[in-house]
Length: 303
Ligand SMILES: [Zn+2]
Ligand SMILES: [Zn+2]
Image 1: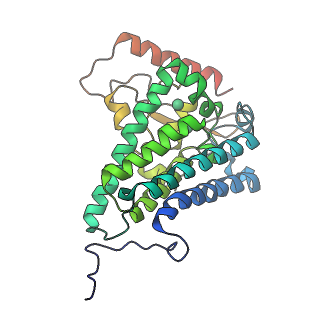
Image 2: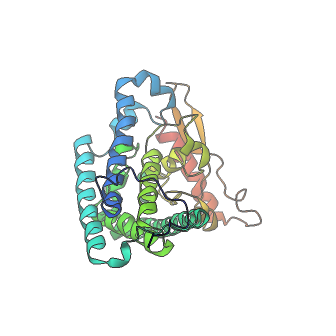
Image 3: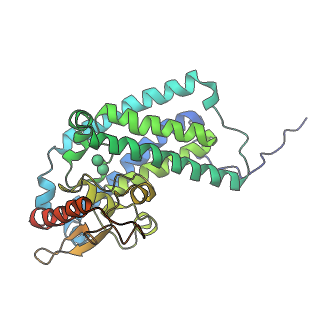
């Protein structure tokens, strides 16, 4: 008896001759991470004068990061190895994670992607915020990521391994399991999320970059969070900004041209939040905090 074709669009899977969908879900995001961040790095190294006008930080600021390139690369590789091990174990030991076929209707798959994005954003917002609020978590784990005061593309996943497992591995597994997506769709989702987070850390503001055009949560938005006085704002990652807006941690960003050297700078658009939460009166304390942030920003990071 002939088998029926799948109900929906069958996703192209160029990795299929070499890898199962499960292994592709583990390996492809790693390949995408180094290719995409490597591309950014190559452009920065080969044409520094060409990218200068798009940089959100001066070279001097980038050189003041509290870690070195070898440490960033080593830290990311260690974390990726641990995460890959956990993901392989999950696929090997849990049958419910093997969902290669059949693939559902195209609209169902789009819905699954949106659900997965919502779950990932929700998990990461609350974990991320907790890691800032809880001094122990910040000091021992999340401060590693914030050694990059001027983000770099291949430092997007420069985290303490505990943070990587909690935020990325658990967040990725929850998004996959709760959305009900196929393993093949998960490969695309993980690769897209990887590219998005690399782009958010690229340190450049590029006029035709689709990630930066389509998403309010982009390299300038996340740059604010990495700045010295920005650690209490813009926790949302990697896709949307709604949790920041709803919970009052939203800092709208504008990109300014620095007159002294021609670089750009991500800065708060205004030092109050009421414009973005209509009808919500700002507490005086919140306003004072934002004012301090603005003063701090312009007196430190532009120098
Ligand atoms: Zn943070
Ligand atoms: Zn970051």
